[in-house]
Length: 546
Image 1 (cartoon, rainbow, N blue to C red):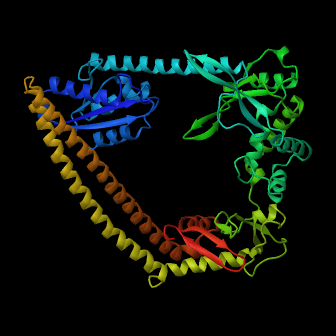
Image 2: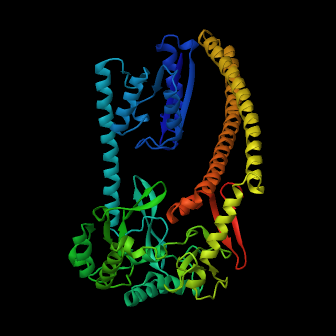
Image 3: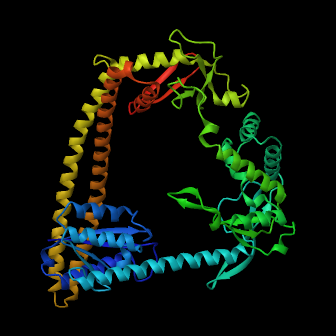
């Protein structure tokens, strides 16, 4: 019999529901309540520091994968909400367990999924868990709105032109914490003022970026400016003066405006919360209805009417969609793959429509985008004739597909080395697993002896020490086994990648003459990592081989 135990805690605390305590209570429950538990194999899964709002938890996902492979008889957890707080996730989990004949036990609620009433109670408890999560989220949002009304800076990266300054201490849940507000940085704010003035006049994000690149003006964190970085500044309400026009704009947009109309008197700037949300650690824009707009305690720099005008221009340009960014060159094969030796992309630039190649294609060249944006001040790499470079790169790729070529032989040798390495790693993992299982069996025997010890303290202490030693050895071996398996999986993945690459090279050779320009581009993207032009030569980098 095989029993899985799952434990989870959002963050470590010294309170009673720690991961260790959950596991201990589950083991005790199994020992005294499940028939045949003394001979069962128990596998533990721990997720420390993960929320129950979804199932994106490494050990949970591993456990579900192991369950689907078969062999599991029971899934035991301390409480239902340790598995998750989303009713849909819980319903899918219970359905999966039922299909695989896996019994589920929640030791706190005493659920039994083998009966209809047990299933109904689990779904009901799941609804309550989800309701609790939503209430917590609502309380957090209410607190944020309350703080927003005071114009506080709640932390994070300060916007360009401002720094955070500590004020008086405030009491939150009996704990004293510092309060912060934004204070203008007189030097940095000049860059922001230039951006707004330049865009109001010329309405060009690219123009601003070109100016910054040519004058070595970098972002607050030392990166080159991009159109996205400039746009983020232009759309940030923190720079907008809280006046009548600004109030009406955000109110009509549907935002949660946390100031009275008469407070929008032009004395201060605005401050926004919840404008973006974190999705896999990348900022994602929220709908305006979720934005919280409040009166800040700092000076704004842009009148409401100008801020609104800028938002309308940005929205109009964005609405052009694909037409606005539609590529003008229909024959270039290396777009997106070709780099200048300075590190920036090279883009195609058409010659006159009257200039054609012998095959009737329009002539074009590739030029460095950095050289173009800085008017040649930061990069002087010579342009390259595009039609010729595309043809030479394709000829070289076709040559690679020949079994006698040095590149083909190199890929085959790499694959052979990987196969040999994989065998060693798998054998090492198998040996480690055997050692782990031996120690786990010893631990089980000791636990059985401990249960029959009848209160002999010296004997109990001796057994506990031995169990601790064996568990420590198991943990060390598990780590070593994990590293061996991880390397084995990486090796296997590299082998498959090489197999695919060799197949793509052979396919490209056979199909080249019949492929369209678009299809050739796609094939090149599968085969090439990049091509670098240094002004005289092109350096080709094959995927997975450099």
